[in-house]
Image (cartoon, rainbow, N blue to C red):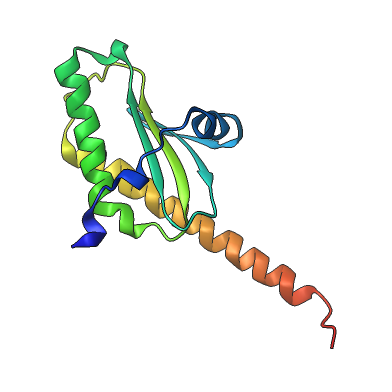
Length: 135
């Protein structure tokens, strides 16, 4: 059952690390969710979840955070590479937010990250195979 945890080390907290992700990271929009992410060499994934006050009152903001956190907890083991990810919501949703909506968006995003990791690994292997062998 340990694969389905959201441990303390999985949470991004340090201001400098968060600033680095927003400066050098890659942006992706997932509908309601916005994402900035950056690959790391840590060996595990770290996440930040932020919901702006413009989204609504605190019970609604907390519900959105809980839905995102639960989806991460359930599907974090899908990610192959270690990555720092910042999920943030800045606009009030037009429709009610459901768990299935958040889950589908995050699963699709995790699959895209895995495809990128596989493509970059294949590229690195191709480059390494092109290098002359020294004996």
